Each structure stands twice: as structure tokens, then as C-alpha cells.
Image (tube, rainbow, N blue to C red):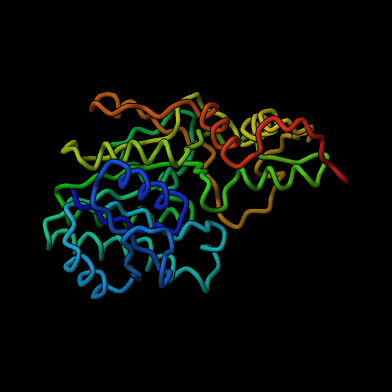
Length: 306
């Protein structure tokens, strides 16, 4: 199968490209960078340019598009000067890709987010739930992307994910490791609940999904139960052999974020099994593999200078 992947300079797109290529698919990656020196076929593309998107997909003529490109800087999205750009990328860019997919008859897989919901309550969000009420500019822009895909295409997957971490890029795990090396104690939010998603594990699921005809909305994070960021951080330091103390604080006490975060990021993933897809491994196992890959496992060192 010929598959076009957007956002290959980012965490998820990078791993999707590797996974698909390893399975023998003909893959073309794209991103904003003029070149990408990783040996894979690559096309520089600004997805906010509708004509460029139509030309690119008309040239490549993929059987499917996996759309992993997005503006994901949630707090920066709230700044007035950035809002138009956020919607141009996450909503407009997604619409441009969906239009081009419709023209060439390609199926599309769009990566979305738990931020399309209001994050209230304690019940896991079902993938087919339509009680949308995003709290942030980022969430609103991603929801517009979802709606564009569903409006324009019949053969589509919308996969909502949360708490993503991987080797290629910045993420919460890397940040906590860095902070833990310079602080005796870190304060971490304890009232936002969800489950992490490791990009290599997710990439394997997406590779399974894109060759299928089991279209619709899905939720995909690692297994292993729902946790808080505080609990996640404690496990990061435990597995990394770090002595940094973790202090739980509420979102209100933390008080540094410009964007409203969902308190309830629990995503119900049962639809994966119902449709024959293999669930992701536990997040604890994923974290261990990630730490091993970046050389941060059980060093037994004690860090902290202040």
C-alpha cells in the first residue's frame, strides 16, 4: 500500500513512518522542513496551503493518508497572535487533506485528542461520544479537524490519543527527567487523570488500522490503568532510579498553565478489541522500554542540587 504521512518530523509521525516502512509499505513522509535526512521519501508541505496539498497528493496518489501533523503547543495556542495559525493548521490543514483525499479516493486516518471533550466527570469517554465541549483553543481547533474529516469523507478513521511520549521530540517524560536532575523535589498535578501513549506502540496500531476497512472513531492509549501526572512522575523516577521527591498539587495550586487542561482524560479503548485490533501494552512496560532506549533506566544515581 502507498501511504502518505504528515508530521514526520514530530514524535508520532516519525515512528509511524518507521513502522510502515518496516512492514514493506511504500511510504512518503511530509512536514514543514525543506528536507528530512532519514533516508525515507519526503515531501516538504505546508498543509495550510490548499493548492499545495492538492498538488502533493495528486502527485503522490497515495492509497491512504495518516495525518499526524498538528499544532500541539497547547499554552502557546491560547496567545492571541497564535490563534489564527492554530486553526489554520489543525482545522484548515486537516480540511485541506480531507478534500484532497476525497479527490483521489484515498482513505484518511486523523490523529485527534481527548481535548475535544470538556474533561469533566470520572467516566471514561467513549469514542462515539459526541458531547463535545473543548475548553482550549487547541481542543477547539482539533475538533474542527475531526468534523471536517467526518463531513468530507466516508472512509476515515479518527483516533483520539492522550499524554503522548516518544524518542523524537519533547514530551512530559523527558521534561520530568531533566527537572529531576536539578531539583530535590518537583511539584506535579494530581487531579488530572488519564493514561500515557507511547508512540512506537501507537504506530503499530495505526499500521494495523490503516490497511483495514474498519472505519470510525477510536480511542488509543496504552493499557495499565488510569493515573494522574503525579503518579506518572513517581513511576518515571522509580524506573529511572532517581531519588527526586514528587509533591502532589492540584491544578489550581500549580496555576501556571494558560490553557485549561481536562481533569478527566480517561479514554475508553474497548472499541479496539471489538473491531479486532490489538490493544497497546501497559504504560508501565512502555515507559520501561522508552527509558531503556534513551539510556535512563535504573542508573541508581541520586540527583538534586536545590
